[in-house]
Amino acid sequence: MLFHVPMGRTVRFSHLESELQRLSYPISRNAAATEFDDVTVLFTKGEKNLGQLVSQTEQEEYESVEDLDAEINNVLPREAVGEPYQSEGEG
Image 1: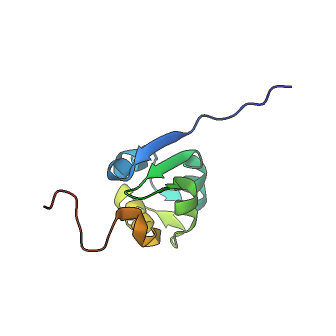
Image 2 (image 1 turned 45 degrees about the vertical axis):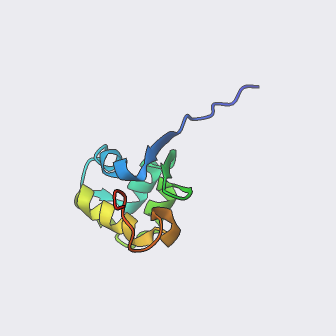
């Protein structure tokens, strides 16, 4: 018996906004989480499932890419984007 295994997508955190633009807004949290259940976000240290991140946000509905992006940033673990007060390109 053969099983269909969905192919997931991987996106770098720095390109997350492009991935969020794939949705039609407004969109509910549940619908957005379902749309991204096969997407893995790569961070400076580690990775997370985008659908799970969306499901952890507090808003019930997002009016725009910016709304959803801000909510996702609120639920990210600190280590996901590197050390506090550091930015890429400084040095």
